[in-house]
Image (cartoon, rainbow, N blue to C red; front, top):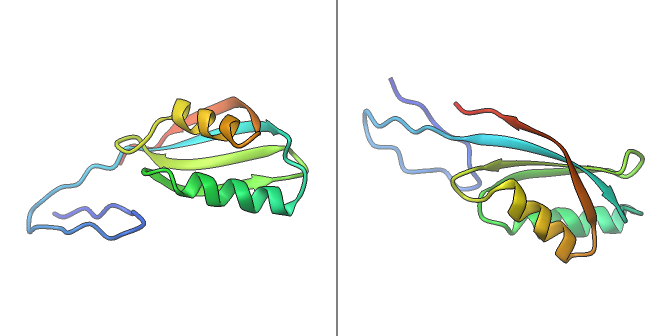
Length: 99
């Protein structure tokens, strides 16, 4: 049986190879999330971090959600990156989706 992992670029799969992806989702409360331009900047910036799979943000709820592969990054690096671009972020939840 073969398993395929989702990533920005498709991995090369060898016959019989099993790939385990350790995906997690981090949810942050983000003060400083003011408008759609800020959301676009956050998404673009976080998507440049190796291991980040997807980013979504909700201005009304001041929330940022990041799906990431733990082999490429971790929640502290993501939080630090948010702070480096001027977003005061507090982790509210981190979910493990290991496959």
